[in-house]
Image 1: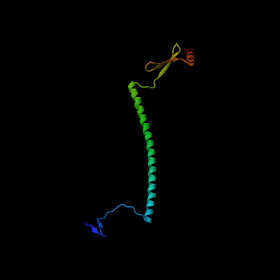
Image 2 (image 1 turned 120 degrees about the vertical axis):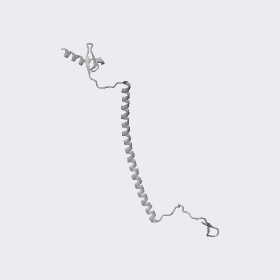
Image 3 (image 1 turned 45 degrees about the horizontal axis):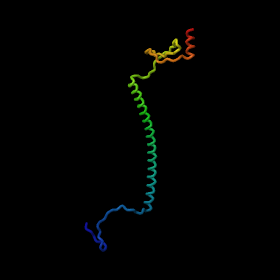
Image 4 (image 1 turned 180 degrees about the horizontal axis):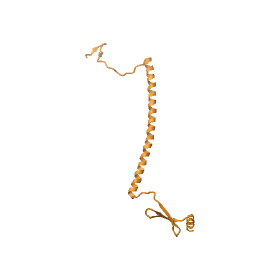
Length: 132
């Protein structure tokens, strides 16, 4: 495009579109106000939804953390059992009062003496009642 002379020594080089401030008409002003109200309501609704989602995620995280802790506890318990090659179980046992006044607790499955303790007064009296 050839340059054109317009006024005196000025030469027009070309045209372009520029992003510049423009004063709003009354209709445009009202339209922008309505847009602002709508966008503000939309933002507030999204913020509320996000806050609710975030709260839900915190609760879900607590549930998952508790579940992980439960499983980890089971793993530690099982590792201890494997390491010791034994585990505690309910085993039938009998209590026997010996002549020395001690109570022996004996496993009925193996005959092993689990504990020995002094007999209480009531246990000694009961043995006398059974003998007599």
